[in-house]
Length: 150
Image 1: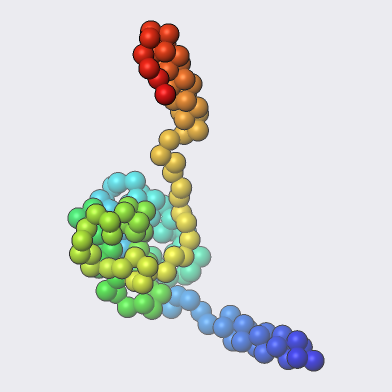
Image 2 (image 1 turned 60 degrees about the vertical axis):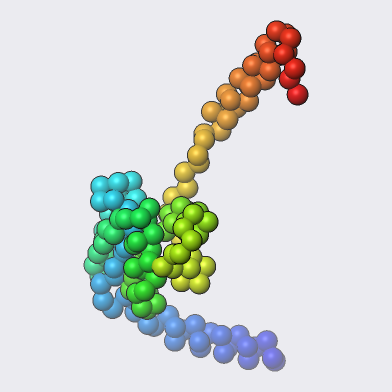
């Protein structure tokens, strides 16, 4: 009986939540990257589809500067109402706190991740295998030439 009541309560809450329409006004998408750069192009490629799905404009707002931290700081000061998104790149979120002693934002407290748009490996697997083979080859040649190789 308790499970039935919990299920009914959850169903009512979810149906009430599902009736809310989002968004009801334009959405601002901050891109803390140079206009015309890879991040900007990605945002501009996705925005029209979001606009179509949501029935509201998605406006790209390029805010480059200070290695992306300027735009991230602007986004952190915007109201947390769901009408401002920011294109967070790993260097702005993961590396910047270790590089810049005073950031205008806290990547953990000021932002909530929504989705991952892109993943780009720093080195293709094939290149890694090539490097490994070359290092082994180099070590063998060095060892044959009498060098101490550990």
